[in-house]
Length: 184
Image (cartoon, rainbow, N blue to C red; front, side, top):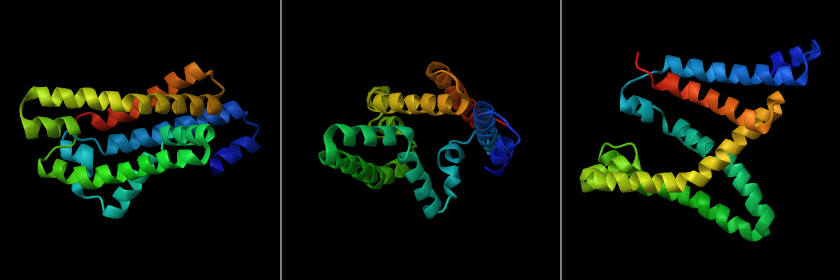
């Protein structure tokens, strides 16, 4: 932030400051991805189970507080007023209940995703395929809101159009994800 303030004092335009901020963020996360690359599923999904509970809870809360959550929260409250709080509380409570009641079974079966768990628990590819289809259907609306948030933030930071912001933002996300998943 101090660097961005200093660049502003030097007369750098708002758009260039946005580009610097966006690039610095992508470089930071890409560096973290490169430093923590792994081919081991336990390392990739759960950091080898070495993360303390407090930090894991903070990561889970950060995952909940995403662009989709805030866009959905604002939209629900705008459309329904205070009655929309019931949906938001149910969404949040459901997130906690899924973590409490589903995570132990995933761990017991040594799996990291719901489709993998279903495949291990019920055997065969049919149960796993059903899990994949249901997970994609449930995640679709969430993903649309996430992509909208990425485009909105990137376009506001850089001055690009919304469509260009979506592509630039998603490219940054893909770079960071690919760097973390590559083999050493």
